[in-house]
Image (cartoon, rainbow, N blue to C red):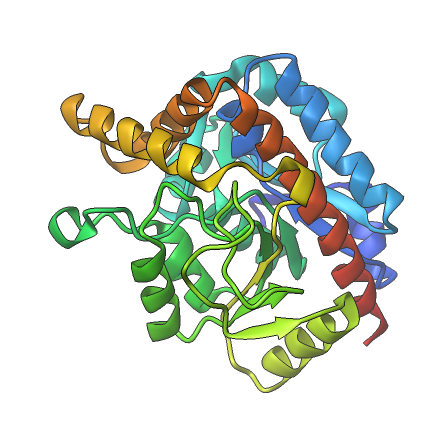
Length: 304
């Protein structure tokens, strides 16, 4: 056990008994939506994982302690504190630990803490990636570098559509990170079920995906795997409408000089406003969908 890490009794027992566990990030709680919707959504995602046979482990930093598995009270603490909570990637973890602060974990930080706890499968909304205009700004999410090194499978609805998907694919390929399409040959683009980018391999059930993960890690090929799970059809959004909203949001971000870690929350919020809030409902539903698939993969992996 790491001295800065607390694993909840339930998660610890599940790991000891080789039961399936699914990690969840906490940025969606503090930075994803307002109180009390954020707390309700976080608890619903945990419920979805339980209903599909696995134990949820929501990950965060509370009072400087890394946490794998949050109590309802701890979820409420993060949900009420909202944007005042530090959004933590790899570089931010030493600061929040050393200063005893709360931290909401991004994909990268969640992967780090999940790996530390021994959790192999993680469900999120969408991964970060290479931002549009990165040729000038070098704005590349730390999520991609983490996927190159950390042995956690990330079930997501592809990369967030505010990103440059072609450059994101190139970066993942360079880093040797496999991108699996769950029942699809195309990379989903978060709010939409497809994009003009392909995946590396289409696998059609949780058993095949678990076998892939077991093979990768038993071959000592370190690093994560992106498992791209398209948003359910009834919640997918019109591609033209989403692209129009993204272009407008990007223009506004440039005008307001918004960059770095502030850009993603700004863009997602603006896209939600410009699409009449439809994108928020889509966002919630795709997280539920990813939680279901992650629970099935974790179950299959626990049998191997």
